[in-house]
Image (cartoon, rainbow, N blue to C red; front, side, top):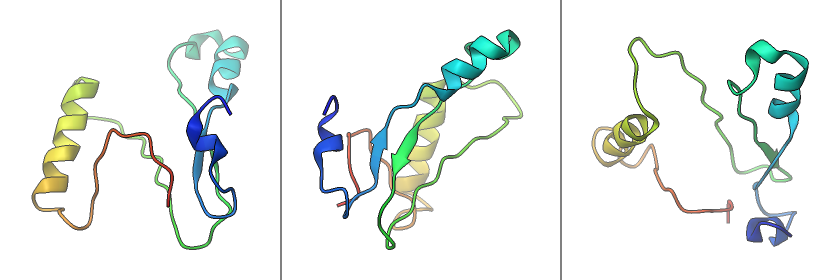
Amino acid sequence: AKDWRGGRAASFNIIPSSTGAAKAVGKVLPSLNGKLTGMSFRVPTVDVSVVDLTVRLEKAATYDEIKAAIKEESEGKMKGILGYTEDDLVST
């Protein structure tokens, strides 16, 4: 597999994968070109979950500022509820 996570046991893991769907939308609707991202998941299990969070912010923020805010909450008020990592992972 191109990504080592794709070689994990398919019956036990959520496996992140790539998709060309967002790029294809940008080709069909040029006004959206470069404004969309996409990801696909192989999800064969019943005991795990994935959240693909999309938000509209009240004020401008950089990607790094958003990541820092989420990380801060995961170590503060949301500790034990919200996890944060930048590691390439699979669900088991």
